[in-house]
Image (cartoon, rainbow, N blue to C red; front, top):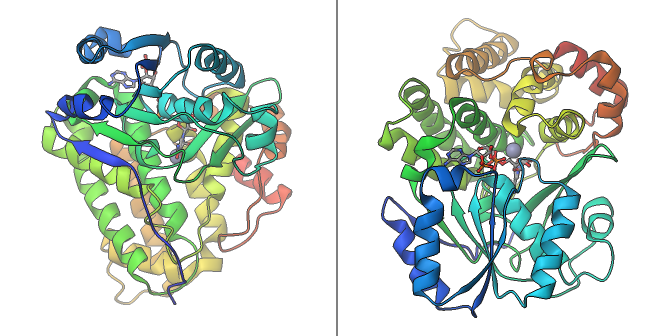
Length: 388
Ligand code: NZQ
Ligand code: ZN
């Protein structure tokens, strides 16, 4: 049965190869002081920085920059952004980059006027938002996280070996996001395919939970089929605009609150992947790729009906003459083949994980109950071993 729910997504999107011009329209809604957040320099190399600065200047904005937002943004970088935001009466935080920069912008948005330590309050204790926020807008350059249309913000505390996300509500979701697929054509292959797997994982995390036959699961299956089709093309020809633009759109819908409506969700792959990220600083999508198959094979029998459905509806496995378990296994084998075809990392060893790290990773793994079985710490260790 589809559960009861409310639905509102306040993020206004501008999609397409001419979408940056709509930044003019959006900037008119905000005061003069802009905090421009970006990463390690890709936007300077590919010219996006210059294009954005020109529009900001034309609109008489005063720009304060926070550069060098790293992948897996740290709490220390967050504190730096809070100082800039607090001291300059910022009217809009404009994130230009991938999920890390968008997540960072949301973190600064909620933290700048937080009286407590924002890491402790919002990430460790997961308290509800209780202070004013600064509006956020995004210009997306890397595809995968869905951060452009959700309230998620993931921050890493390297010393505490914790990487934690907080899903904030409407007031923190980007007021607007500009999605220009041509901006994504310069992403290195490794990052691109990591993003592809991140999208698949977001859909799977929401699909592999509950046995109910509901509309949301059919939407998930459609998105997965589109993703598989377009990523096969893009992995071979990254400059294929049609494939890359479809993938960009799929990524947004994979994690913009739609697929969790009216049903339970899992997210255990992300919990293990984030714990791996906290210890290794590895690329997010690759951490998920390395642990997914061992996790799904461990819980397959607990959610057999859904794994069977995944095989038949998503991977076109022919069920004739096979037991449900054989069909479900064939679906996971098809997932594995696709992962190898697009070229994601298939094990934790390639991400620098050693057995000595297992305890820290298991300690940093939150055990959720939304999937087919709540794991024990020993099962997490077993999945890590299997993922090596
Ligand atoms: O820093 P620069 O120089 O910009 O380089 C980046 C970075 O090295 C590069 N890049 C981005 N756009 C590019 C480009 N290089 C060339 N051309 C372009 N157009 O790509 C690298 C990766 O960027 P990053 O933003 O780190 O990647 P991603 O978008 O995968 O974001 C990962 C972060 O998002 C979090 C992850 O945990 C991780 O911290 N997530 C956020 C979620 C959310 N808000 O809902 C959900 C996800 O599950 C995820 O946890
Ligand atoms: Zn993810």
